[in-house]
Length: 189
Ligand code: ADP
Image (cartoon, rainbow, N blue to C red; front, side, top):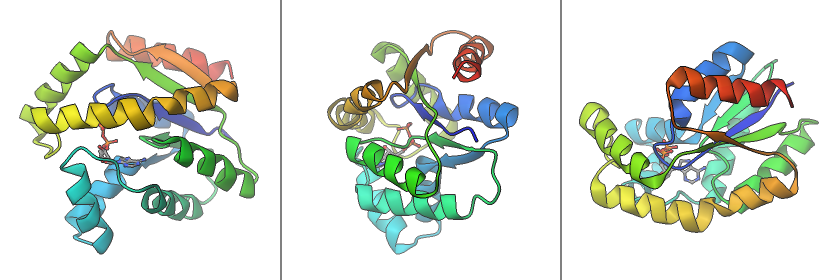
């Protein structure tokens, strides 16, 4: 089994690279951002709560996100493995992920971190806003998301460093070049 967490700041290209990774390695894709947006469009109680937070650039509480992940893992069937996109985003989520995988006799093989300078990230997000119209891609909300990223998500890097699972990848360049770098990491774990 191959279980990977794709990590990186907003706009680092996780969604795009995820598609390449799941196709090549036949992994089940679990994106907490996509699941939350689905809950919002279905107007579930969880979705309504999440929308308030997401539209202000805040993270959704760990308990909610962990529940969503457990549901997906339970429905994963005989998967070759899982690709987590946008999860874990806090140290607490990372610790819980270790536990819930262990409980299922599974293990996270690697955390692949897409590294992109902040100036490029802001530009990419603003470009995306004009194409996709995501409600959290406005200048103010992007700023709030970066603050959350710096204070709550960056420390996740140290957590995986201590487990020898942290693999930084240069996230600047063509989509193909970046994917080639990611494959190098995955093929060598
Ligand atoms: P991006 O990587 O561009 O920030 P995502 O689609 O991964 O976008 O997430 C969008 C929003 O959903 C986040 O800003 C956050 O509010 C919420 N979210 C997604 N994943 C998580 C998570 N693991 N924990 C808490 N909140 C999350």
